[in-house]
Structures are given as structure tokens and as C-alpha cells.
Figure 1 (cartoon, rainbow, N blue to C red):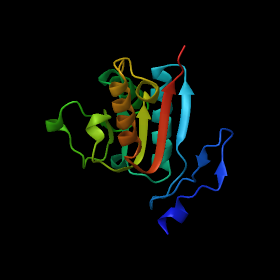
Figure 2: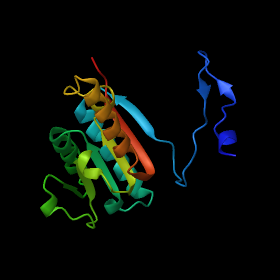
Figure 3: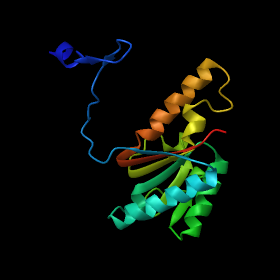
Length: 166
């Protein structure tokens, strides 16, 4: 029976079988992926979408922005401050309250094990497209795994922001 489920019905132009995506019990919109010209533009876009999600009924405390670096976390915090959105940046586990009704701003690593309704991933191109540190194949694979972990933190809504590579 399992083999019937895995049999692709169509193939792409190169003959590679196409397997339809399957929902694992989660409901929500398709992920939003956008390319923007700068990290500030990413942060402003994310702040706007967080405000919109809150207006649609999502609690601040059920939202997170996941960033590849502390510099991106700082940029995101500035954008949230400009919009006067409640947030808390997690740079130290000891002063971080997951239950607080604030948008959580943290690194991709810190998000492991969490599940939040609305999640934005900032700096995805640095992770998926080969973070500067990822000079070796092993490092690139680790970056892809890290991106997967961050993208799967969203229970309902996922937003991914990239900086256009120039």
C-alpha cells in the first residue's frame, strides 16, 4: 500500500518523477517567499506582516522572527521598534520568557524544538544559497538542515525573506 502512495504519476522535462507534496496535519497558507534589496527592507516587510497577522487574530506571543545572525536580529528589532510592535530579542536564554506576549526574535539555532503559529525567516538566502562560512559541502548541508528546522517551526503561517544577491 505504501508503494502505491509513493508512485509518481508525472515526470518533469528530465524524466525525474514528481511526487505531490503531502500535508502532515497542519493547516494554513502557502509560505510567502520574497526577494528584497536589503536587510532593512526584509526587516520592514517582516514587521508589516507581523502587524497584519496580529490584526487577523494571531497573538504576539505566538509569532517569531528567526534570523541567521545576531546582526539580522538587531535589524529586525529596529524594524519592530519603528512599528511599535512588542518584541523580545533572545541573545541569552536566561532572560528570555517564551510565554511572554511578544514577538520572539531569535537565531535559527535557538528555534529548535519550538512551534509557533506565525514564523518569519530572515536572511534565508544566506542559509539556503550558501552562507559565507559554508565553504565546504558539509557546511552547506548543515546550513540547509538549519533552514529546514527554521521553516518547520511555523504551525500556520511561514514567511521567508531573501536579500537579492548583487
